[in-house]
Image (cartoon, rainbow over all chains, first blue to last red; front, side):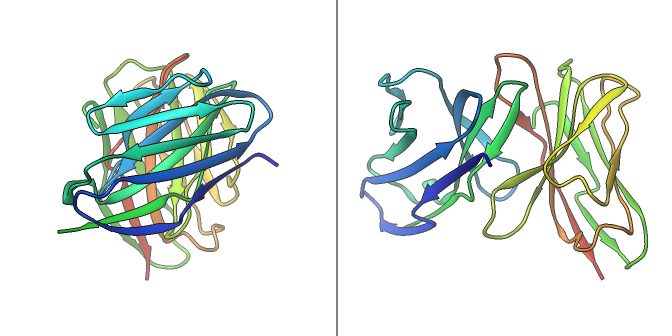
Length: 110
Length: 111
C-alpha cells in the first residue's frame, strides 16, 4: 500500500530557530513530491520536487528530494510566528493522484 | 483558492440526511478532486475526475457520490451511508504536470 510518513507529528520552536521537517514515502508510480502549508483553511502550494539533489528555495524555506532513499526534507530558517501551520507532504503518482502524509504541526512561539 | 469556490463554508446535518457540497472552478482545469481531512490525519482522496462525464473512486469513496456534468463543477454528496461524515472537505483542481490547487473547504458537522 502506498504511504507517506511525516515526522515529527508536531513541533514547538522559538522565533529565530531553524526547523527541519521530514517526509518519507513508499509509492508505486512516483511522479513528484509536493509540500503544502495549511493554516486555517486550504493548503497552499510551497514546492514541487521531481529530481534528486536539487534544492528548491523560496525565501526562508527550502526543500530537497532524495529519490534513492525515498525522502524529502523541508527546512525553515529564522522562523517567525507566521510560519505556524500544518505542513503537508504529498506524493504525486502517475494519473495525478496525490497521497498525503498526516502532516507536521509547527508552532512558533514569540 | 483564487478561482476555486466551495460552499457552504460550514454545514450542519442531522443523521440520516444526505447533503451536497459544492465545488466550482473558473481555472479551466480538467481534473477535479475531493479530499477529506480529519484531525491528526492527512488528506484522503474520496473521488476524482479527469474529464467531464467521467470520475473514479479514491481511497475512501464509500458513502459518497459525485457527478461531473460540467467542467466547472464537481459536487460531492455525502449520503446517509457514510458512517462518520464529520470532517473538513477540500476540493482541488489540477492538470497534467502541474500541482493541485485547493479551494477554501467546507466543514461538515453531523449533529
